Image (cartoon, rainbow, N blue to C red; front, side):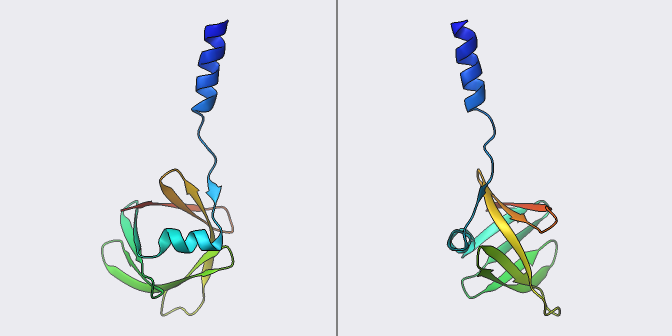
Length: 107
């Protein structure tokens, strides 16, 4: 019985942790001057507020933190899209209003 309790305790301890939501300050710290690798693309977030996304060709946009959200704008559009963010181990998660998630790893 003791062996079962130990194995069960180790298994429970190895359970996958829930993603940790990020505050605005944590989002700024996590992204500023950082490049994230996505599935088939990468993106760099510059301190100037510019961002460069590449999925085969360069696309320049803007980023900023508003409250506890990451927001971006991609010209020629003038609207901003905002996302909640969380950390899941080594990954940063961008979470849309509909619950869609984009996962990025620091390059």
